[in-house]
Each structure stands twice: as structure tokens, then as C-alpha cells.
Image (cartoon, rainbow over all chains, first blue to last red; front, side, top):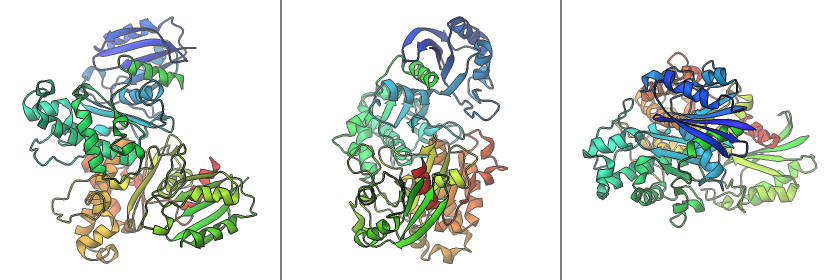
Length: 288
Length: 288
């Protein structure tokens, strides 16, 4: 069976045809412009490829409520042209296939659980730290959603005692994203993260905030592995400090061999998939 | 098919025989003493009842890792006699049936989703606020577990600006449980919660902490309904204030008709089940 997959991102749409063994048979990259420009190219690529289902991992927020009337519709986003665009419905109409939609980060979690760094466990969490902070998770064999999709980047954190930065989230000021996403680093220190690579204070504070996020995710979701990706996590020195803070903050409360100093390097890890993570995860959605 | 169900609590074991339609056919209540006293009475009740599977909702912490060697074994708990007691294995040995174990709060969430106040949604969270704070959730058709079981009561919260109480959690001091469980209320104000019923300041502060917990759970799990039970929630004036704080703290970020001032009374609700919630949920485990 041939399946369609789209990684719908803020800068590009990666479109692929795959099969039900999870193999990518062909793909194309289309820049994300207005829907009226981008979407006809998407339809054109898939037309006459004989796909039977379509999976999409999309930027958001996006409506994932299957019982409502606007499943797969983009919600309020800074990308004005896409606000209220019924992504799933339009694809269904043009290609005449069932469409399954999820968030980009849920799809990344699914992808890591099938083909990446979480194939040996049943539950995992994927977090990306970049211009924003988003996370997705696989629990009980599928991604986590309900009322809406998770917005894990917006949980509350406690301020580092040496930090007077007010926070950059337009909704909450000093939530995790407001304190630790790339733009917060730049606003706090006056330079982009890449230019601060050698300043340990920057990355200690960053790790302090991200570790608070992970600890809360552990308390709520109890994932068997946490995968950290995104631009900010390219600062690889972060991993060690985050792991130390997580152990320190848990303070021995959660009893698991995975959460010990000996094993935490295999608990909090970078992604196993790189280029094709998003589009393979979207294919995974179509396979289910 | 006849099924066994146990609500294994800190003060009593509620043992029931039910059927695969979720009906309780007979039950008995056995006080929780040492395992050597309590367990023979449990075996005696179930013996010759012809049950084919057993579901247990247990106090914890308890090992839920099906791939490890100690599934269903009680872990470190203040109930010294029960530490390291292999609850599932012992029942399996004495009654010769498969045993499915989960936490008391996960089982309560399952029970509410099948027979209580969350039958109309796919995902729900159940939180109990009493001598401790614990929560369980149903996501993708089953309860949430992984590395271990959730310990949602221990997430970090921000201090109320008028609160100087240091917190009562032995592991984290001022986590949610440390600031808002029954013993924290008593330690902060010098009287038990029931004696403070008429002091609005007490319940405003309590609601402030609990709402922070709920908001973080919403960001991480996106439940379609939140059910709040336990002794502290008997102070019914808490519900209104918690709902207000949740809307205020979300600040419009999660777009859902359930999270509006008009509908939040049906989003954050008391339990629908009372007496038999735990044991019915345990029966639900055995039915799966």
C-alpha cells in the first residue's frame, strides 16, 4: 500500500510517498509560503501517486479534535496566511484520501519511538528547544492529545536565583519557553546562543530551566526516555548539565534504575533521526 | 466470566467479585494491617469464587514495569510492613490467576472514564487532594505509566506572594504536595482544614497552588476533563476559585471551548463515583 506523508513546517513542507513498511519511496521539499502558493504544489506532487492515506505532522497550533468540525485546521499562529486554513480538509478534498494530522513534535516522538532512539521502550517524550519549546509524547501506543494537543513548553518554572530576566512568552512571560527558548537566551544575554557557546553561566542557567521542565514531565508522564532536539540543543554541553540537574531536582523520589547517575546518559538523549524524522513520523501516522 | 478486583488502600482492602460487564457481585472490606494478617483474609475471600483474572488498584509507590522482575511489588512506603511486599506475585501464587496492577489514582481515573464523570470523553485526569496529592490519567484508552507511574503531586509550583510556609514534602519541601496537601494546610495555618472552612484566605491560597498543578497538567497531558477528589476537596468552595485561577493562569493560550468561563464548571468537576470508585476501577483493569 502506498501512503502519503507531509512534514508541514514553518519554512518548508517535506512531502513524501512511502509504503506501509515505513520506507520513503520519493520526496520533494516545497517552501512554506501562503497556502494559495504552497498547497497547489503539494497536491501536484501527490496526484497520481496512488496513495491511500495521508499522515501530516504540522506546525501549530492545530485543531486535533476528531469529533469537532475543524479537525486539522490551523489555529491562531504568527503565520497570518495560515490562520484558519483547513489543512486536512483541503488535502482530503484534493487527493480524496483519509488524512491523519498531529503536531510536529508528537510526530517526532512517534518517529523516534519507531525508528530512532526510543525503539526499545514503550513510552517516550520528544522535546525541541529552538525558537520555541515544544514537546510531544508517545503513551499507550499513540501520541498524547485530548482537549487539544500538549503545549508542554508553557509549563511554569521557578526563577534561577541569579536571573532577573522577565521572560519572553507573550502569554505567560516567564514560563519555560519564555525563559529558555532561543529568543529568551538572546534577550537575556544580548547575543544569540551560538555566540555564547563558551560562557558556562549561560548554559548552566539554560540547563536549570530545561531540567525543571523535564522533571515535571517525568512526574506527569513517566516517560521511559526523553529525547532532546532543536537548535539550542546543538550546544551539546547542555546535556551533561541537564542530566545532573534532573537527578538533583528529583532528589531520589522516583525509583528507577534509569534515573541514576550511571544510566541517565541513556535516559536523556539527542535524537536518533535527523533529516527524515518529521516526514517518517508522518508516514508512521498514516501506517496506524 | 468472573473477575476479581481489589482496592488496596492504606486503611482498608476492598475486595470484590464482579463480571465482565463491570457489575460488582459481592464484596468484603478487610482492614490493612501487616501483609501476614491482611493477605490470608484476601485469599480466603477469593478462593473458590471462580475468578479468572484479578485487577488491583494499589497504594504506592508500586512497581508497574511489566518487563522487570518485580511487577506489582510495593516499593518504599511509610507503611513499613509492606515495603518490598510482592503483592501481585503473592496473589498470583495463591489464587492462580493473572494479576493486573495499577496505582489507586490511575484506577480512579479509569473508573471515572468508564462509569463516572468522564464517560463522554476519551482522556481524563483524576487528582486526589488529601494527606498527599496524587493523580492518574487515562490517555489513548489506558492509564498513563512508563518509567514508573506518574507522581503528579510532586511537580514544582511557584510560591504565593503572601506565603512564607517552607513546605512539607520530605523530598522537595515546596512541591505541590508539600504546599497544598492536607498536612501542609495544617502546618501553615496551625489548624486542620476542616476547622478553617470559613477563612477565605486559606482556600484562596490553596486554590492558587492546585490551579498551578492543573494548568501544568493541561499543558502536558491535555485532558478533556479534570476530576478532583479527596478530603481537601470536600471544601467545595475550592472548585470555584480553582476554576477562576486556571482560566487566569492559562491566559487564553489553549484554545478550547471547554476552557472558557461559561464551560469550565463542566471541565473541572468532583468525582461522579463515590463508594465503589476504587474497586470498580480495579474491576475495569481486569476487564481489559
